[in-house]
Image 1 (cartoon, rainbow, N blue to C red):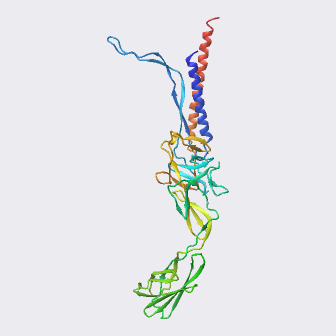
Image 2 (image 1 turned 90 degrees about the vertical axis):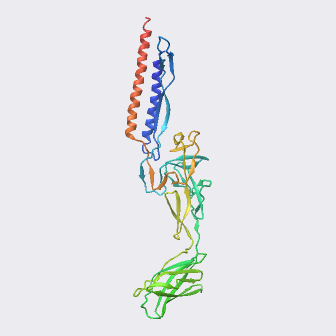
Image 3 (image 1 turned 30 degrees about the horizontal axis):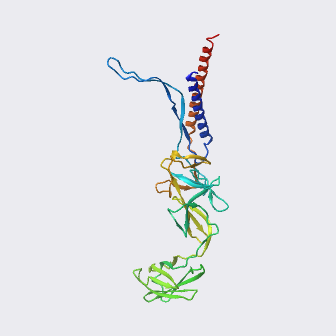
Length: 389
C-alpha cells in the first residue's frame, strides 16, 4: 500500500488530538484556576531509500534520501501562566499571586490545585468543592508551628480565648496646674483578674501645694499613692502608681494650666471570649477573631512549588498530582520564594480565546489537508487497479 495513505492517517489522528485539546481549552474558559494546554507535533521515523556517500577522489559525496512516515503527537504542554483576577468578596475564595499550588488531601492522596474556591464543611475544615481538605500548619495558643507536618486547616469552632489579667494601665492628658489646692479629679477604669472577672480601678487626682497626688483603689481593697510634681508643665516626679498588681503609667500626664483632660488611655487585660470569625493575611495566616476583641493565629495555609510544574499530571477537579518528572513538592509558607495569597478573589482561567479559535482553524485545515492525502492516495490506487481490466 502507498506510504502516503498511512501518513495521511497519522495526520488525521494528530490533528484530531489537537482539536480535542483546543476544544477542552475552550470548554474551560470560565473554570477557575484552569491552565490551557497546547499540542506539540513531531515527525515519525523516516524510511531510508539511499544512504549518504562520502566524497572520494573524483567523486563528490551524496546526501541520504529518506521518506517520512507521518506525524505524531510529541506531547501536550500545560501553560502555567498567571490567570486574571476575579473579585468575589467571599472570604474563603483564595487566589495565589505568583508560583505555588494549594495542597489538598482527598482519599488519602495529596493533590495540588490553583483553584481556590474553598468553603468550610460541617466539621469546620476548609475544603474544595469536591471535598478535598486544604492543608496547612495548625496554631497552638496563637503560635503557628512552621516547618512541621502539615494537616487539615480547621476553624476552632467553640474554642475560647483565655482571659488575660490586667497588669498595666496608661494614663494620658493634662492636670490643670492652676486648680485650687484640694481640688479632685476622679477617673475610673475596668480591669480584669486572671479568671476574667471585672473590678473597677478608681484613680483620684488631688491638687496639692507642690503638684498633684494620685491615689488608686480597686474593688478588692488594694490601694496605692504617688506624688506627682511638674516643672513648666512637664512631669518631673511620680510617674508610676501600683494598685493591686496593676502598674499605672503616669509618665504621659502633663501639668499645664486650664486643661483637665486626664483620662485612662488603655489597659492590657480582657475577659474570656468565644470564636466569632476569621480573616486571611497575605502570608496565608488565618487570624481568628474572638468576642473579647482578641485576635490570634489559628493556622497557616501552605503552598507547594515544583522544579518542573509542566510535569504534573492532571487529576481532574482542577487538581494535579506529582509525577517523577515534576519532582517532589517544596512545601512552605506563602511569600517566602512563593506566591502570596489573596482572600476574596479567584484566579481565572488563562485560556486565550483568540489564540484557541486560531488553533481551531489550524487544526481543522490540517485535518482537511490530511484527509485530502487519503483521497488522493485512494485515487492513485484506483488507477493502479484499473490497469488490469
